[in-house]
Amino acid sequence: MRAQKIVMTSAVSTALLVISALSLAAEEITLEQAIINTITQNPELQAFGYELRAQNGVILQAGLSPKPELTVTVEDVLGTGVAQGLSGAQTTASISWVLEGQLRQRRIDAARTGSLVLASEAEVMRLDAAAQTARYYTQALAHQARLQLAAQSISLAEDTVTTISQRVAAGTSPRSDLARARAELSMRELMQEDLNHELVGFYHRIAAQWGALEPDFSHVGGDLTNLPAVEPYPSLEARIEQNPDLTRFLSEQRLHESTLLLEQARRNSLWQFNAGVRRMERSSDVGFVAGVTIPLNRGNQNQGRIEEARVRLAQSSARQEAERIRVMTSLFLFHQELEHSLHIVESLRSDVIPEYELALSEVRRAYELGSSSYMEWLQVQNDLLAAREQLLEASVLAHQNMIEIERLTGVRIAQTGSEQ
Image 1 (cartoon, rainbow, N blue to C red):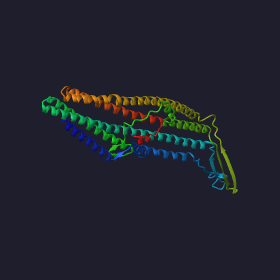
Image 2: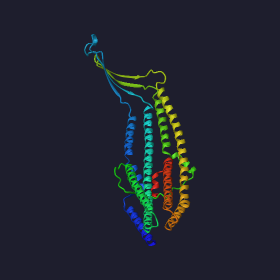
Image 3: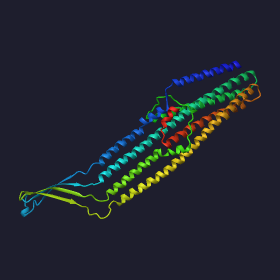
Image 4: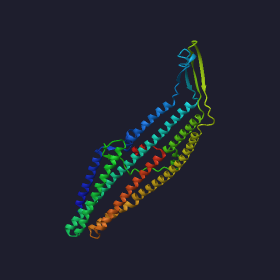
């Protein structure tokens, strides 16, 4: 029996080596590569790039002054007496233009500030896309690890079937134990198939982040046991102003300030000047004419829009404060969850799993000696597998919390690719 165990262990080791070699030979992608692909090829980011380019046209348009207008007037024609025919006509040709003063510069300032807002939105979209890619990547990495756990559970089930088959053949165990063991093996193989199916879906989600309908990789690189380091909360809180959402609100405030100045510049109607020449047909004389059009509006004719701009400015400030509270609260909660996950990982690694492994070894020996039942053996197997699964889930949660912390503090998520 011991020789058979040695042969079986050697076969399992060989299989693991083959699986490892196949994994290395497969096309692998790193988190950093996935992030770079997302930033440079994401369809939504590319579409928003046209919005940025369109804003350049808005700036160009804002800098254009009103075109001068040419006016031609003919008087004292086609009438009676001295105005009969064209002999007494007076023809005036004049050019008029509007004095804009500071209005043109205010338009340009508002358009340029609009570009800053769009740039802030683009930064938010880039970081959101990178964070989403990192989330999908972490889930794919977790499913790869779950497949490894599934392979371990199947190996345990196969070993159990072999051991029970020998005891049934020797007449020392009932055939019901063998039937249960075979059913358990089949169930674990089904779980492995489900995990493979879900893993393919995450590969496609990752590839879709840069617009690919089919992934050009068959494996994601990384190690979930390489856990993130926990920074002290005060140092994370100090970086909260780098949050792109808060930066976007600052840009919006500048836009509302520029809009307010623009509306204030529009409160007074513009003066219009004109100048030209007049020809009198009767005497063939030519004279210079000039004029000015002064609006006679009384009071501020733009007070409604000025008040709206002021309210928008105050609203933006209030929204920024609300966003800061939300971000700081989320940062605190994610930091707490990260510390808790790391504590769970450490406890499972050092205290729980080693004891279950020892218990599994003892209960198997007891089963072979006939002093333990199959159900007791199976229960210890399931307890060990559940602890390993819990260890994996805690590690995944730690990485997910780190992604959210990086998103909230504005840290480039791509830098974690080389670490993993």
